[in-house]
Image (cartoon, rainbow, N blue to C red; front, side):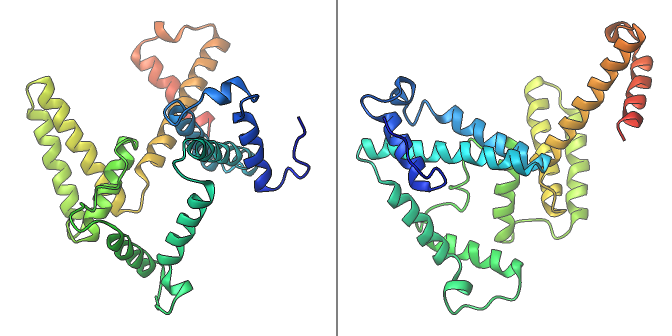
Length: 259
């Protein structure tokens, strides 16, 4: 079976995916469905995020290719099922981009990026059904912190938010108190959720991406803990046999050593 000559063209990817899905194509690709590919799509999204966090352009290029493959594969499956064509996907996003940028493709004037975002939200509202919630289109399967920040951002857009960050800090202190007073495990879990929700609001107000901030914290912990393990191997120690104070001393050493 011949392969496309110019592999830099988008049409080459479309043709390759169609070939893999053909009756005499790849057995694995042929058996895939929208549902079976959900995990793959999510995994590729996270790998793109990792490349972005690392600032690795070469890795980002490769991961974007993997993500693009998933999109084209879903479009091919839809085409075979008579659901929609890839051209409709492209036409849809092009139409949406033009509609939501009237200051570029129309006569509307904006003064800054903040006004652009305000216009974007207005136009998104026009696209929703009259009885639809502004929170309805936030994917429920988003990571919980990211979901929390997005629904709070949308609520703030219509004025449902604290006037200043001091009010949110007071709310955080209130939630800490409620968590401390909780008696049952169910109550503690509920109050802990409220704590996280309030922290996500603080991050939103301060322009911090809570998901990215937690990923960075996880990364720092991983690097420092691994460094502690490395120190123990060098010194013939077993980390699990050290006292908590000794482990903390290693942690401080790891923080210093990784600066």
